[in-house]
Length: 168
Image 1 (spheres, rainbow, N blue to C red):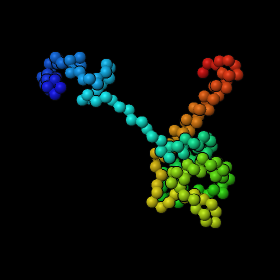
Image 2: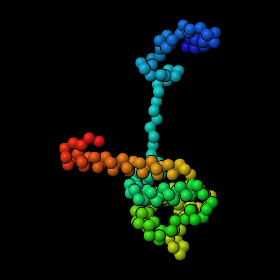
Image 3: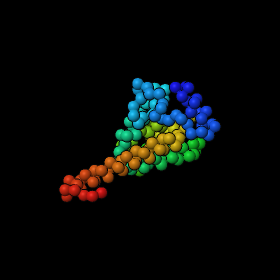
Image 4: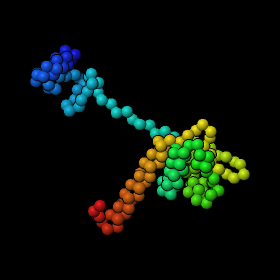
């Protein structure tokens, strides 16, 4: 194998048409037609394992909650030292409706690193030394896209069920 590679390389260096080709490559017992292998190893695709954070993100399917969480995370990531973006007042009407009253949204914020603060009013805060990144923002954006696609699929399925078939 090494001799074959060296011969091909030498011929390429002197601008000759190499006498070696993929067809002349020494075959290995693991080599399959059309699949490139390295040193006889079979290509492997490692399975991805969902983390607790991934599961918490996928559990939130309320688009309003995802919109608000996305804005909160974006502001916290872009301006990490600004205290007003590191605190969420749960008594705020919009926050209460989209986050505090939606159990999966609260669980997601807790998984992201926010902690409950029981002072004079209920709030979630990002602890000192913890910072949000654009990675978390992208996770929320990807979930929003999944929710949109699922809603569209359900809409198309409902239309197909009502009228027989509809071209999309």
